Length: 186
Image (cartoon, rainbow, N blue to C red; front, side):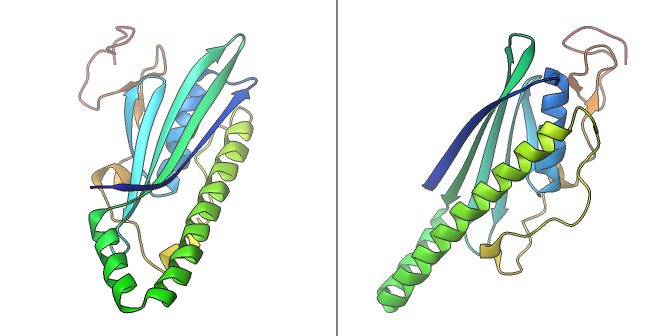
């Protein structure tokens, strides 16, 4: 069973950006932050990262919608505590209740601050993307609450950037010969 710590929602209009650019920017940004990404449609994706020692999973959902001549990006980021994380917390609470309560409050604040930082970094990157459509560069600041841990590697985090259709810029499967959205030859 997963316990949701919090969910942050944000929506912004992105002038001068196409839906394809918006979904590509989102995929590149969240992959650079060690989230495993899967496309749920040509204009939406979801992703997650998992820190096993803490039992913490962060999940994102991104939806890109038309808003007149512009596009809008709807972003949802949530932090969830898995059964492993809850069990460790419960054992700690029974043994050292006052310390665990204080550490838990600090950890929650750190999780929330990290989520706000990630969201702000995403909006900054997305706003600059139409002028500089490149993957993010430079070192990534690890979450303060991770204490030197690495996110669990997954096939999706190590995967190269999604292959895009030359006709409609939709993500396509690596072994496809034709785009399933517009029918263009790959």
